Image (cartoon, rainbow over all chains, first blue to last red):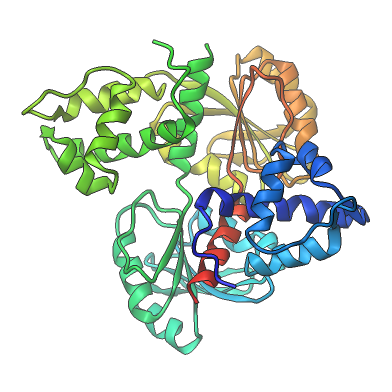
Length: 209
Length: 209
């Protein structure tokens, strides 16, 4: 079921719910009410019920939610019931951190290729994946049905990398470069702008003094 | 001037404005109108003017904004005209990436201490800073007037790390652990939840199919 009217505010809460439900599942909790979920998440019980109602009738009056069922359904809603084939660009510290982050492969995201423009880095291995030259990326993406490109480079050159990713057939970009990438409308870009996060922290620290 | 009524939505746009203005400054652009800024940022000219009006009268009718002045003022608003003394906890791949990210030291954030619970890692150096044992962190924070703690550990143990940071006198936490840290009201926490960002991407990719 397509949910074109769900706001980004709701969408961004879903992974949090998924995280909490996964923890409850790990701890063998069988059921939970929206009130109890509210205490865990700091979202109101009413917000939680409203958010989840966008996607189906999961809870039951007087019972609450079945943890296993809800966690599984949220996983499907988040697209986590499939695997995603990805390439990573930029084998510096951040790229290495992302390539090595086990939490992603656990959730079905496979980094099948890593690319860097620095000849000193190509040929090295990150978690069994050999770093290749940028020139090889376009063909690699087409030959391996790559869906996601993870950009871990500086701002310089990031737009050109995005252009190559899109031309080669990638549909989603996870972008760590401090740039606003221009892409066609059918391409999804999710930004992680670390500088902006840090500057938000400094703003809030200043305001509290 | 304290701005207690500025919403987080506005606050999170400020670092983007700062980034764009810094780029304009690098490119020797002297002035810019809200309309031109709107084309660069994808925010409407009216939104930009409203956002900036929260903090003072920067622009002039018919002239627009002076790039250098506005960039400098935004820098002050974001608290970037001072330095921040930080410690980092968790010297794994992500911690190393953050410790090595030059963009932060360029903006006045100094990582003075790095701590890890793994004895195999303590004693190593990340960018001239020696990794110390967790037991040394409390005293180090007090002796060095540390304001910010950067948590780059897994979820397990992150709350205890936050507790120690707060007890020792830290007022801001930049948190990469996939956890919602409980802290006193006067402590600021800024989360970077990479899993949640990635799951948002998978949700959006699924919706576009």
